Image 1 (tube, rainbow, N blue to C red):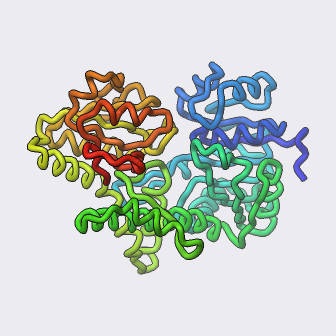
Image 2 (cartoon, rainbow, N blue to C red):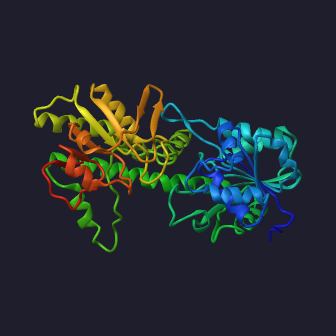
Image 3 (cartoon, rainbow, N blue to C red):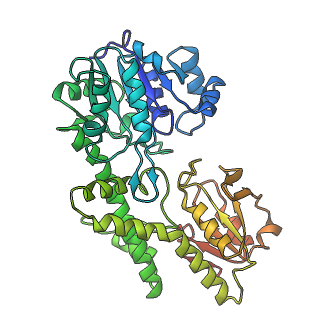
Length: 426
């Protein structure tokens, strides 16, 4: 059992995973120190203002005032902690090459400051073998011995930003340690905040669990995207087909097409597995094919819009187009790898005049893009040659859009119950 009066935790990386996790432990009465190098995030916390939807400013303020949570960029605070949870980014270099530099830098700093007997858990998604092959040597370099100076474990993050049905405590936690003692310690730690903890035989198995989950989704989304393109050629409504197939009570799980997939997980995680498999002489054709299909979807939507405009005697060059929704998923203020951004770029490449509306994103300033969200006014909507539903936020009046727009390209099936000649579906 964890003694809440004596136990202290550090969470390295206060992003979409680390921040809610840190708050979950702090709400249980366990003092938590967040370590974050992003000065903007630290400034927000200092001002008692949350920067992600899964943590309210009210609960952040409460935890800060109770001194159950604090944030710093100083790794020396680890000398007072019993456990360290690492939730740092693991991006890709190019399209297929994993970048675990954030993990390595974090663990090098951790090894310099941890107290003897500390439990250290990596949560950042990575390829199988990272915990044993990359992290253990870092501790050895600092003359630290596993089982004496520290205990090492991997536990894949499973947080779904904006999902109120499944917050941190309701999502089962998989843990796999370097040895049984490390696994047991991690189970005891996470059991204080999470309803169900699932131990597996090794860190390598735990690393692969996360990759399997997201590879499953990648391949099925890629499949339905390809079928959507096929169905369009065959003049079949893919949305009707999915709906009918979903009536089968066994052997089928519905996935839905769209303008692409964003976020930190699905577009990237399976490619970590793809890369690692190649080192064993194995090429995963399913992963690469699904990734390529999904990556093409923003361009495909732009092609379809160009075709729809052409059928109405309009050229896409100079056409005025409104993209509705630019976040990577509905009802979440998160632009990470959003396919809407790629769609805007594809439309601009065709010299369309692109505007956007998103109630969560007041402005877009990403590389060459510098746009502001418009206000949806009747007279302005009528001026657009095409309105594109790219992200289906719940707080948008789609009836209003339909009533005052000339043409709508619906890539999310928000108008599934509407029969109107001005609506064209993906």
